[in-house]
Image (tube, rainbow, N blue to C red; front, top):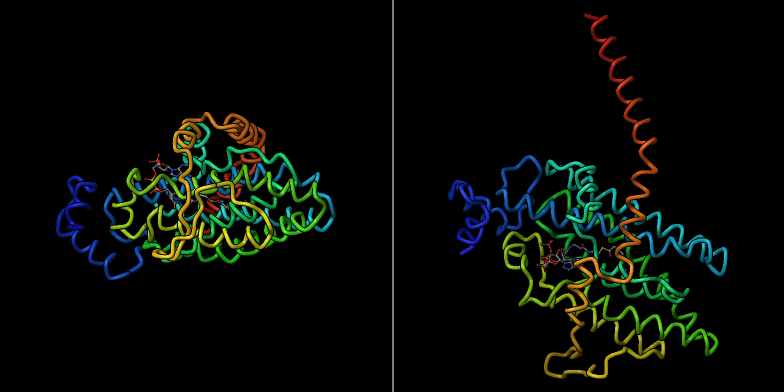
Length: 329
Ligand code: 3HC
């Protein structure tokens, strides 16, 4: 069954090789960059890892917006550390993607031209300080739910990047929950801000897990290749089940009147996000899509002198090494 699925992706690749590759996947082996792999496997990894890396980098923008406005020095330091971590996460992931034969410049060019995505969640604005708590609590909470299983993904460099990233994500989520707890336990105005942030970030956070399984384009194949370990709906359900008690503990209300404990499944029944909104955001029509891409395009233009300087220095060093080699011969 797997060989047939893989073959459809692999076009004219040798069925024996495909079957042997799938047997490695099914045995839980790690695939390393120098191993043979079906072209479809490579392309899917470049797509998912590239978009994951872009999400880390673009995800810095909504939080970076509040570094100069953090209410205390401690909160400013925490937010600075988190935003810096996200840049590092992007770095690990771009490095993992580069082992598949694509350059970081290629991936950046595809992002800036709109041919590659980043997570929909980052197209929503952070309007108040409570939003920064909601981003850590809900967005990083959802990211952790999605990334922990990816530590067992079949591609070695991606798995190792995930192990490294997950260690830092836990701090991201805890600091967000701590922030929102302080507000929920604060004045009536602060609690109202925390509730408003939950109201605006709840459904966009559910969208982070991707469309429902019946509409997921890649899940079947990605799971056959153990690029993806769980389905979108499985992880969404786990996120809801984890988050509802946390909101209750804070005395905040999940903005979903259909939320109801289901004894049979031992989990919460909840309303699906508005998928038409999701697809509009993916098409570029979210509240902040234009701002986010323009910010990245400006950063790329403003950084050209630095990249040229680095390349110029590298070329000179290379020329000196070559001259030294020729002189030594
Ligand atoms: N935002 C943007 N695009 C999304 C999306 C989302 N929330 N969910 C799905 N999509 C896109 C997919 O990329 C795909 O489009 P494409 O073919 O052009 O790539 C299409 O919608 C269909 O979705 P599928 O379910 O078929 O796609 P996947 O199998 O790739 O599943 C995914 C989507 C669950 C996001 C999966 O790609 C994944 O697990 N990616 C790795 C984790 C990741 O990227 N997380 C993003 C957040 S990272 C983050 O939040 C950083 C943290 O530090 C804050």
